[in-house]
Length: 261
Ligand code: PGA
Image (tube, rainbow, N blue to C red; front, side, top):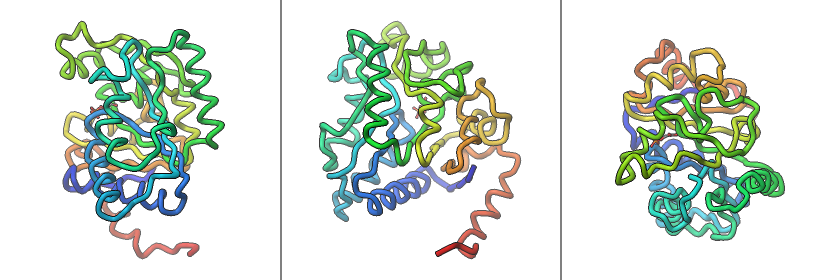
């Protein structure tokens, strides 16, 4: 896994946004895998800025989000559909009908999961998937113990995740217990993965994901199995990495490395 460490959250977000912009410029009809949470907000703000100031064009792009709470309507202010509309979609020119978030209100959630997988396949697969990491090492809602071969499905949230997310709800009892989430296997099929992490509270799960064994106890560690995965970290989230000096060394030497171009 490539590990890129930046001094600040802003620098981390700008670098990841630059990579997404590069992909969208090279392939205007790119299929973008998107994530919610506080971590990607800086990246989305930067994409909005690039769209507004530089005309970065999303008019041919398609998107698929990782997950959605079961039981929250799309207009609920804590639904992930609402989050994406507010924090990205309404500020760029991606056609609304090509933005996909799992349907947390589906009458048949199991069928909705299979349908979501089919829609991703029909779109040609995901070109680049953005990921955050939970304090328990989850990617999307793939909590510890999730099969590394899992597909989109209904998942019961871990108590830790419910506690982490309670800050967004009036009481902890309002946090949904179930979610529809892409599986680890679904995520690993994206052609490129971008893991974002900032803050010292993520340093433990980040170190386990990057330098620990591949294990379903930290589903982000499955990124080690992917041929094109990059972790974008701020220095606080990188502080428990044992090989930090090595990652910094690689980053300084990369511009001079031989390439095929
Ligand atoms: P956060 O959540 O970005 O709000 O820290 C990340 C996650 O739980 O995946």
